[in-house]
Length: 256
Image 1: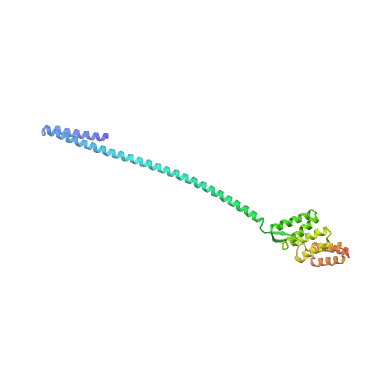
Image 2: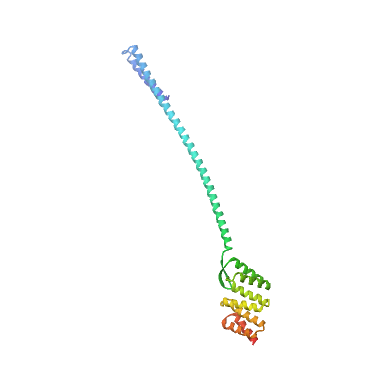
């Protein structure tokens, strides 16, 4: 019970008692007692009503506090769940990023391996064409044998290359180096045949003037001076601006 309520009740009682004392002449003792009892009953009723209201307020406050605590607990639970889900999402994002990097690396590796087997553009003696990796590898291997000075091995390697890749873009150049290998091996007739094969297939090839000059050289080695002169004349007439034509003029002056 609050102090303000008690003070109010006491003041009310005092006022009633004062009033009863002042009017003692008007009421007898029984009436005074009844009035006092009635007043006390009212005060008690008010006190009990106030206590009931206070208890109801206390219960409401406790219920509100419990509700707030429950709500706070739910909020903390939701926060924890969100944190857990966020952590899982971050982990999933990292795993996805790792998988994407691995996929890219694998794709790049596959592309690189495929490129080793796919035809590609190459340039030889100023000519561009498409060649399989095997063609390029075998041609370079045969040329490496020639550059080492192994002319019998080079002759075999270039002859095998031409046989295996008859339509190759390397063929004119391979015929040129095969002819040179045969010339070094003193197979002059075989060399002439392959140099002529180059001229028949690609008369505009950058190596064509050299091939004509090499035919003349083979004819000179075979003691065919007349044939060599005709070949050198043909070289000067067909390829007048070539370096081989300059060399042909010098050879002609020595043969005549």
